[in-house]
Image 1: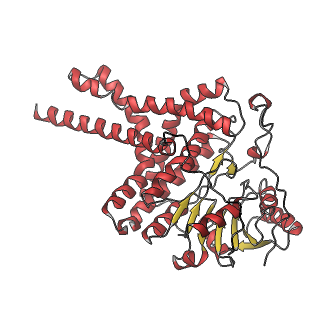
Image 2: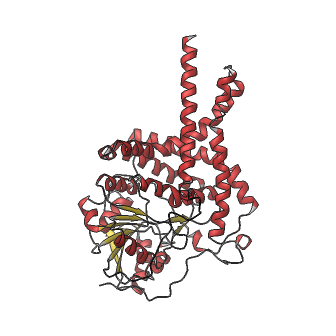
Image 3: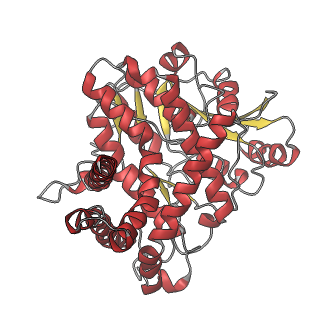
Length: 445
């Protein structure tokens, strides 16, 4: 009898914990929409005036096996309207095809692009970033991925925000675009929309920002003082954000639909799983490093612990909720306890309702039509998507226990470069592509 009581108490605690995690996740998702007047708290507010002082930019683009997308990305980057930019393309020394793609772009923009070879024994994104950092001369170091579509006016907005608010670092918006590509793509796209549009802003309000992997900008002197990126970390972006937060750096976050950096959803379930495994394992690494424990305030440390463990916790919700519901039907437990098992489903159902609403907003924002089959994918894909996240989290944990930290790269095909399928395009926007710049390419100093 005492053992049964203990098990019931533990069961209730698990249900309470799941309910708290699900409710917290929903609140963070909605942070950017909390203003009753509808005025977005995350918008870019620009005066349109040229700043008196100017910041120079060094943009690092790490690229390995990216011959399909790199040249297009570099040509778009070179159309930036900012007058003082250098682009450091870091190519692995064992990747001839990507080097050729970089060379073709550099031949068209020799005054802007510099190709640097990464001769690191172990190839990884942070190792490439550190190689690129040694070649940077600008006031601000920015990072873009090899498949990114970058708005030509983004650097001007970043400059204005960093100067006006005296920021040490700034995270700008990143958005996956091709929600029509696969059954899981629509959920993946919405994840980015919520993360960069809302959750990062909430985390910035708590002075703890795990940065995104690209469209991030840091003052070069501060970045060098921190020793650059951790070459052994699978979530080097998150790790840098933690160290900047510990250093009490002023970190800004902006999201503007017209300025977001556009990317593509992983092409296959396998690619998605590998990517999420790397991210989850990277968060575990950052947690185990313990830099977050040096945050000055207790509430920051509690928040940091929760954020760093949240990928695993949130993924496990998708597994435990069905189990708890099944327990309510088939296990011989008191009716009152059985009813409690349904509590975590309430915020889960509320989250799906919110996702459907926000998906409509996403489509309106980017000029697409929310089709019925995309909405069905969003709803019906929720359980298997959570299973994928849980599997990735478990795989990440197993890899970390084994000490396996090889970099599982995500391959890119440039799907977001293409025209949107005609049946989802609104009459107002024929394509979802980057607007062309009406300015001359940037010049170096």
